[in-house]
Amino acid sequence: MRVNSENLALLSSQFRGYLEGERVDQFFETYGIQFSAGHWCAGGFSDRFCRSYAETPLDESAVGQIARVAEAGIKGIELNNEMFLDEHLQIDDNAIRTVQQALQAHGLIATNMNTNIWTRARFRMGSITNPDPGRRREALEYCLQTVEIAKRVGTRSVQLWPGSDGWDYHFEVNYGKQLDWFIEGCVEIARKANSYGLLFGTEAKQKEPREGNMILNTTAKAAFVAKTVNETLGTTAMGVVIDYGHEQMVGNQPADSLYLLKRMAVPIANFHINAAKYNSNDEDRVTGTDDIWRLAEFCYAAVDTGYEGWFGEDQFTYRMDPVRAMRLSKELFANAMKKALAIYSIRDKLQQAQESGEVANVIDVVKRILTCE
Image (cartoon, rainbow, N blue to C red; front, top):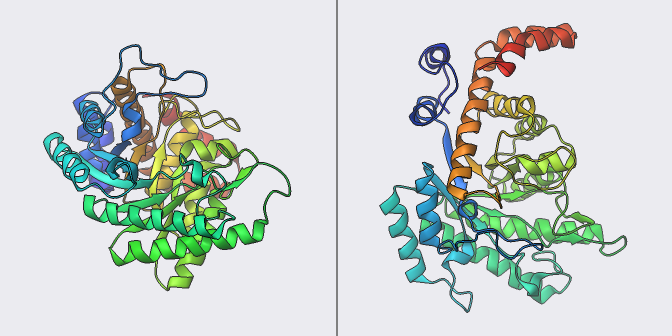
């Protein structure tokens, strides 16, 4: 981001009041805020309760989803590896060309490549932690293939969300062996990503689809894995993907996790932003529709810790028009970030209040910014 005394002064003039429409884009441009959306945010949506929430079918192709992300006025898009595979799970050159042409036509930047491995029945007992060594190796090769796709498509990072890795019952797995297998796999993925100039990241989540725990149930554990991998390789090849809703699920203070990562010298590979109730499920609702104090503090921490990457929507707005939902998230996030920047502009006062040990002093510093436009 680009934050300095000159552009912070614009908060009370050019960016005074609620931001919407073109002013959101001007705000992002002024402060160097890079905003994206996962292609999945463009719908359609289904879950175990309803096979489709769209009465009128949407174009579910990569091209159709890219078009809807662009229609929402968003500049970046996250993709996943299976968009580029044929029926034999081999890289499809035509699919890569088609997506690249669509990205160019709509002026979108491919930001991150996700590895979709949890939807495969073969890996229902785990991907790179599968108890079967043959399937464990197969999963690793699948992840390494994603690195190839990321390089060819031109994303800055490649990601593994280990959805099927974890456990559902007590005594189901040997926790130590499973963690060792996960680290060993991440070493190989990070090594290849680093050789291509890509940052590799993994994302923590408490549960779902694994219901006991996923192997990385907290950002702290994901950070431990990334730090271990980086020490093994002797370079900073791996980072952590922060998902705001996942932080909510496990009861973390999202801002606190950013400072932890900075202290551990573990980079943030990517941001996923959305809304979820505290200590609840992974709801993936429109960003900024719950606790604005928590979200603004999260944005403040991103500025204060020097984050330079993309902020990406990760939402499943089942009963909303996806284009309108993406626009709303972009708009509400911009206004939360504006509040964070306003607090950052008086960070000396905030620090002084924090050092006083009187929480009322802190509330006095931030209350008007957080409760008024």
